[in-house]
Image 1: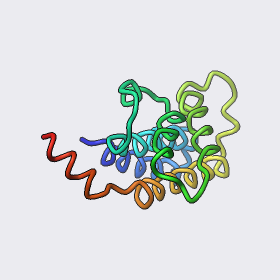
Image 2 (image 1 turned 90 degrees about the vertical axis):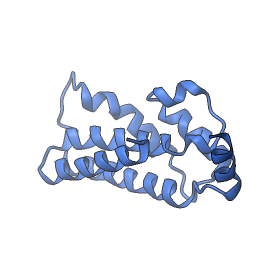
Image 3 (image 1 turned 90 degrees about the horizontal axis):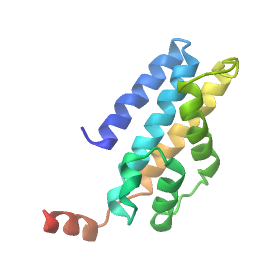
Image 4 (image 1 turned 60 degrees about the horizontal axis):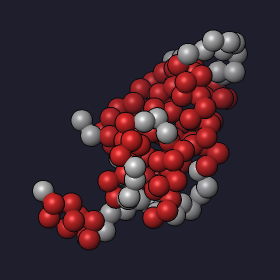
Length: 135
């Protein structure tokens, strides 16, 4: 399964979890989906190979924005997703932060990232030619 398809499945899972009041797990799935959507476009930019197997969404986003400018600055959203990727997965402290409102913000982040990936990280004919010429 490719990164984008996997991101879509996890995105749908996040919405199901949110709609069933499982806000902490919805946040975790949002963060994972954001990571996978971003990774789905790495092949269009120069990047360090380690990024593909890391959870370093901050630097993945930086790599993408060197080539694909975003109409909306997603830095805050990406940083929040990086922070809560582990915190939601391993809640060592209180989980009171995981409210409907909090999880709803993360769903908005996800929507913004997906818009960026779908509409602003667009392959050119040269990208497609290079991809298929190499295979």
